[in-house]
Image 1 (tube, each protein chain N blue to C red):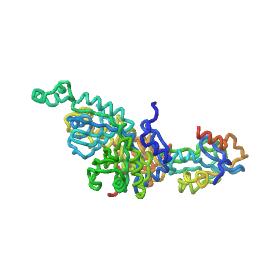
Image 2 (image 1 turned 90 degrees about the vertical axis):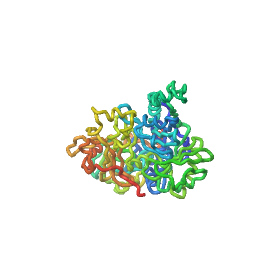
Image 3 (image 1 turned 120 degrees about the horizontal axis):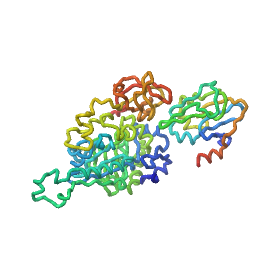
Image 4 (image 1 turned 180 degrees about the vertical axis):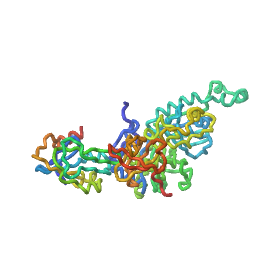
Amino acid sequence: MTDLSALKYTDEHEWIAGSGDTLTIGITDYAAEKLGDVVFVELPAVGTELTAGAVVGEIESTKSVGELYAPVAGTVVEINDAVVDDPSLVNAEPFEGGWLIKVSVADGAIDGLLDRDAYVALTEG
Amino acid sequence: MSDPRYTPLRERHEALGASFTDFGGWQMPVRYTSDLAEHHAVRQAAGIFDISHMAEFLVTGESAAAFLDYALAGRLSTMAVGKAKYSLILSESGGIVDDVIVYRLAEDRYLVIANAGNRGFVDQAFASRVRSFPSLIERQGPARAEGEERSFAGFLGDRGVDVEDVSDTYALIAVQGPAAEAIVSATAGITDLGTPWADQKYYAWADAFFLGEPLLIARTGYTGEDGFELLVRAEDAGALWDAVVTAGAEHGLVPAGLAARDTLRLEAGMPLYGHELTRETKPAQAGLGRVVVSDKESFIGKDALFSVPEPDEGSDAPVLVGLVAEGKRAGRAGYAVVDADGTALGEITSGALSPTLGHPIAMAYLDPSSAEEGTAVFLDVRGTKIPATVTALPFYRRTK
């Protein structure tokens, strides 16, 4: 089980794991539950340069479409092919098998992210 | 906005951990666990839905049948007691005020089930139509008025019909899926069945009792599967829900929310008011021309739809079609449908990745020139053009 307090979060309901120069990004259980059953995931190609805050992918459920925002600037170094093949992983294991992309960041500068307490406060507000 | 309303089954939904959504001013369960699992359960076993938000009207009186022929698009006067019929409430200009199911309870008694979001409009329409409905004395002429049966009520313009909104008195529980009959027939507390389960026909109803109080069992639904809609006193709704859930345990019954209900009805090609049907929609555009009985003497909406200068036939108004696409990206309500050059052909009114079929499906209003089955079009999915093909509705038909 993932230690959720070790993750960083955005107000767009992404989580960010890792502290070195490669970060793993997914969407939170809260976002997955709000979306409903995820049936399609579109992720940026490996090598894509991300601008923080830009839309880089889509997560579709039966009922709605969610956008994936780049929480940090960097380069996509890996995407989760398993979740492309089986989007239900986003619902089943949002913090584990449902991760979406891995991003290489230039200098590890990931300011402006929320810690667990702040994120929980956001979703309960 | 007024406060959100909850049905009598709110506690059941909360105990099951349902997510709620606003629907027509009601807080309704959108899903309990997984809308896909709920959808598949209804196709393969059964689902139980709380549809108590829907509105019910009782139309009674010696002129009830004639009144409904006047107030609705269809002919309800010739429907046998025990049967049900899909119908439309039209506006004077021929648009659709609501789509309803009408059950004939007795010669002089009908039940009309309307959409939750249209309850007020339907109530207003019935009230004004009772007023404009010719009175008994006008319809029967002076011969009767001068005879022995002349009555003071007649001179006051008695319409012979009364319409009562009984929505708050009753709850409505739908049990849908191939196992529905096995489940409701095993539900404890249902007694004095008027018609044996196996003899209950689609679009018919049977009377019964639940815990000693009247229960209406209608073999109707909004999923494309066999199933029942149970009209029960609001105070007994929880007990009936529990009894059906208990009976359904061994048959794979699951509680199902509005998300599953929407994908189920979409696969079955059934229109949803506010999406496929609006006040601006003419029945023929929605493929519902057959619901309108044009040779009735007079009914609300007839003049607009059948007047000679502006015939409804052959117009260039958009028509409702089915669309299928490959892949996994669904077109959704409001997305444009375009041709190869990007020229707009129409707009999607409902769309989803079909859980049963595994590919995107949609209903859309298209220009008649592009509405022929097999026409190749494109869905504009947030800027990406997805190839799609016009197809006949429904997308899914159960095997009997």
